[in-house]
Amino acid sequence: MMRIIGIDPGLRFTGWGIIESEGSRLHHIANGVVKTLSTNELPKRLVEIHDGIQTVLADYQPDEAAVEITLANKNPSSTLKLGMARGIALITPALVGLPVGEYLPMIVKKSVVGTGHATKDQVQMMVERLLPGCKITSSDAADALAIAICHAHNVTTGRKWAEGTEDPISAALKKAGIEDPRTVKKTGKAWGKKFR
Image (cartoon, rainbow, N blue to C red):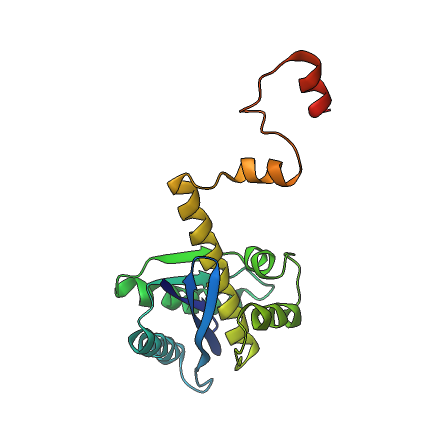
């Protein structure tokens, strides 16, 4: 069993979500938001994010962390500030020795919803389905839970590949009803018919 914290960094609201992953089963533990006061200066707000995440880590003792990669937007100043908040979200779990995964928003959405262009509402709805009984406190917390779910899927699949118990190419071919060409003899017409 592995406990994961997902973090959706933001200067005003940093969402966090804790799940437990046991094989392919996922369990919701907690979720919430670290809020900063917009009236405070930037350094103070960054400290508030650090302290908030640090409190969550101390309270829930996750084994691994996952943080969303933030993309640039039209306002360079906002992008820079968001990057600073993301830096805090990365360093806080790293300082206590947790491995930290990073995921693009499109990868998170594809992992949870099945499409990289899902809306926030679709992400929240799927998070609630994947984590029955979960009461989500905000859209930022829903995004953080989605990041944790994405990390759980990624780690589980990576471990299967490392153990040699799952080969992604073989699994995809089998699902499509095609024999794996790496294990089939190349015998003229039969080969050509199979893969035409």
